[in-house]
Image (cartoon, rainbow, N blue to C red; front, side, top):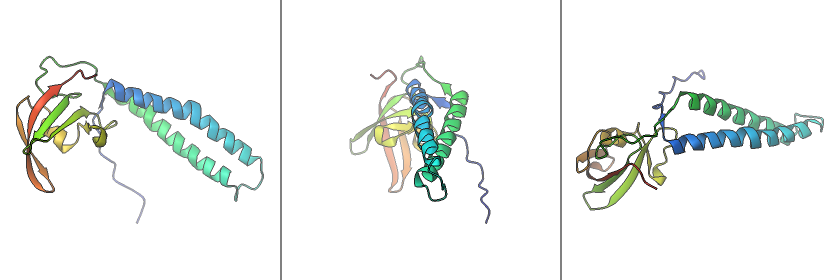
Length: 167
């Protein structure tokens, strides 16, 4: 079997200002701090002679490839994403960047921010706009109900709050 894999579907090209800043910070950290350090380690390890059994050299070169790959990805991705930094006029309707509080049938509330696929982190309440739940939420209004298919069955949620400017 070959190594060919079908291309992954690209995520939406939207990002919040905070998400873009995190990507810029990561790019700066990799390029200005980590890469020079690893390059120096590889340079020193190369002076030691036999490179075939030199762990610092082998692992340093591997780490350089990882850093370069990530730098390429971040550079390309930052060029193609659109930073969404304005709030919509109708703030009772759910759009990208909204903080949405959902209430389930038991009265338990959960708050998510709808963000781009590059910055999602469900544990921290950041829900990718490409996820099934976010797709159901986008376009809905305050006080609407949605039904979500879960492994346990269909669950109903009530949209309790929609906010855009949260500090």
